[in-house]
Image (cartoon, rainbow, N blue to C red; front, side, top):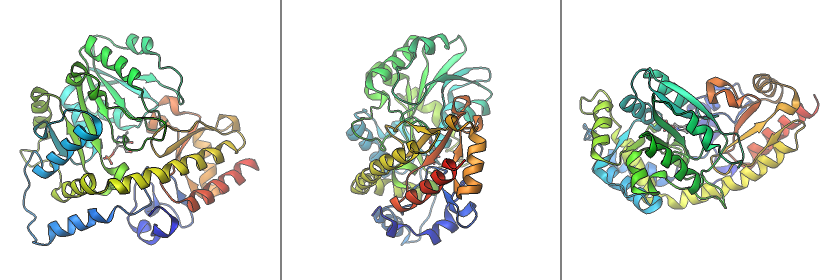
Length: 389
Ligand SMILES: Cc1ncc(COP(=O)(O)O)c(C=O)c1O
């Protein structure tokens, strides 16, 4: 399922956007946006076909298709040990929009929200989009102790939210239960909303274990709003579908009202919800195979990156991205990205503030959700060019 023969580059070159195959010149390998090169599980396409057969594509319920709500609640109860209720969660048209929605619902102009540095740009973007201020908290790659005293110092009277990205894109850190407990205690002490983005929670490599912060205690759960999505685990990015889950009816009402779902101005596509039900209920075997493949690719990519002059890459604990420090080459992130693109015909994401924050300078990010052949070719070309500098 996860070898070169299952990858259809002709289709990807027509359909895979967001800095990927459809956007790069012929011959360039895009290890950019974290979107798998593998086709999604067959059960997902079958479920969509079954649903469309009778040709009724009517409006769905604003709070989500019942089967979707039940399936996602079951997932959180069984797989994440979170006492989730269908009536406290609803589908949104992507985890990206879910992050934005939580910021819109709980932040006012001038409020502050803590974000990690580095972290995916969606947090800063969403916070600033609602007129609030993103306050970066440095968490370097690797398993060095998180400086919770520093985190507490960054909390002011204006702070309303802590944005938790777990596992953390781009460094791949998987937060331990102790670390999550400390974050939860701070949220309780200062009455902060925890925005817990768990879109990467299925992509965790042994021996690391994912913990949902809402599973730790009832007090912490009451501070938490969880957002998740299905782009990373099941390759459904183009279906633009995610979930926002509250822990109480007060938070739920604020979120649902802010979503504009009742007015039909926004809402989640019914077919996308059907796809998620199939993914969660039937495609566990596919996800297991995908993660087993990714664990092998993680090892291969990290070994190769560490054999390149001036590169240093700590193995990610989760996420299918490698975040390589390139400061030993004497080049900036942007210079390295350009060199790799023009000389090695490989596209990577430079560690620029606009993508991941200030703390990403000196790094490049590579996605490894593809075949061993493609990765071997891409890394061989990068190594050849960088080592001959
Ligand atoms: C941490 C994080 N959250 C959210 C998203 C967005 O996911 P979606 O495709 O559901 O919008 C991404 C995608 O890269 C991500 O890395």
